[in-house]
Image 1: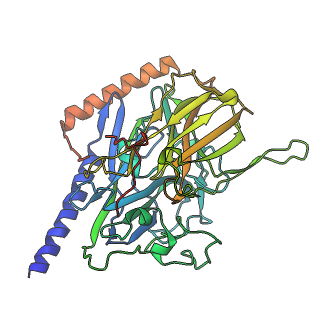
Image 2 (image 1 turned 90 degrees about the vertical axis):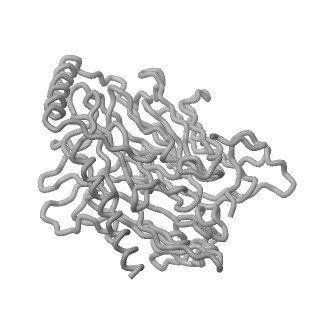
Image 3 (image 1 turned 180 degrees about the vertical axis):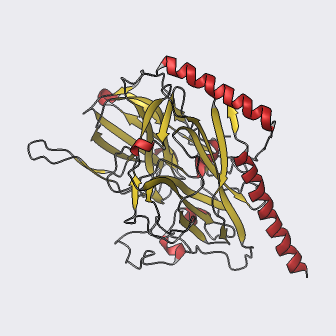
Length: 460
């Protein structure tokens, strides 16, 4: 009887959460023409040591020809409460844009289909990787305290009917990679996907791991399990990724920006005009940081990885941010002559509450240069530097760098902008008059160590 009551309460909690989110979708928050929608991923279940790394197709997303202004997410439980990283580590989430052939019978939400299908066309970001990192948006443990806002008058254009091939429709895929570390023997080892802790010697497709591969995403695939303390008992939990999208209707007032994702592991092959060879970017996505020699002072234990390559096109830098894992101490993108284009540094938590978890990266600093102040020229040699503490070994780390670039010649149409704002404000006023105001509140530090960079190891 007690178990039945517990199941009923759990079911009602999930129903209530879904109802509240659906209500928030029905009543869009609109400020100065910016609308905000809040969505939930499909539910996923985790128990101590387990891993979710699923692909969800055709997820809820704002429709129409729009400009994205902000996109962020966090893991919540069935009651809508944010879940701390020391319980469920958000390795990453990513949103991928694609075109789906109409009339194809694919479940709206499906987690076991291959990423690439013959009836789908992936809409990649603008570069630079050839073989990886196709997402438009994506973050990890830092998601709660990292700004992703696209400043005015800029926006990320999606849903343009002129871009969608005949017979297709635009959809979005969501990838959620989360690891339940409750009761883990080694929390850091689990979050860094150390293969010995997962007791695996092959990847999820039963292919043998590469020689000397000691940790990374090949070992923490969906349904894998990290080692948990024998005496630990924990319940299975129903979780969601709650993601928030802010946007405006597309018009001539918006200046489009392109998304570029750089990867410090990129194996770059320079273009050769004499042979017609195009530049190639083979991005490996992750790498390993070896610990420094025994006896070395922590202040001297810094691992630096560098990528130098040629930039493909002219543009103004509108936004920049790095993505690093635990142990990261910052990343900088340099232009020719050593000029700093953008530096992005981590914030480490100092407590237990969501958004401030001690030992975890809970935010990354961002760059918002004044429009036109930071330019990158076609053919300019850029250098990306990613720094990690090497006081201990780290496996499966990343050194990515996100950039939003605007065409230097692009200018908003002031006349059309004024018309669009007037129409938007009129439409918003009519909507507010007709339905009233509905408010929905969601739940949503830096510790300095002797190093001075805020990094300290996660306790197991």
